[in-house]
Image (cartoon, rainbow, N blue to C red):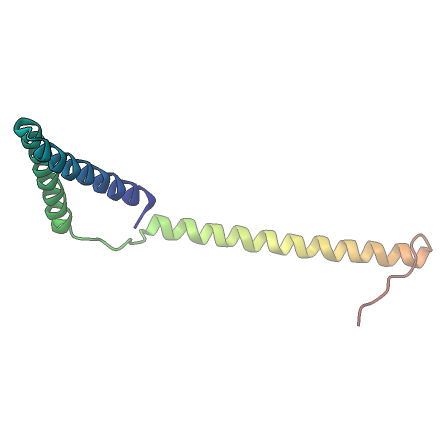
Length: 115
C-alpha cells in the first residue's frame, strides 16, 4: 500500500468514525435532523467507497512492459557505465605507475604492502 493510499484510508476511517459518533450523539440528544444528517453523510461516504472499490476491481492490472526504446536506453546506460569503469581502471593504473616512478626516483618512501 502506498503512502498516499494509507493517508486516504486513515481519512476515510476518521470520516466514518466522526459520522457514527455524531449519529449516536445526535440520537442520544433527541435531535432527529442532526442524526439524519450524520446518517446521510455516512451512507454517502459508504456509497462512494463501494463505487471506488467496484471501479478499481474492474480495471485490469497490467504488468510493466519494456518497450524497445526502454531496452535501448538501458543498453546505452550499461555501455556508459562499462566505459566509465574502464577509464577508472586506466586512471588507477596510471596512478600506480606514477607512484612507482616516484619511488624509484626517491621522491616518495616505498609503499608498504598489506599481507
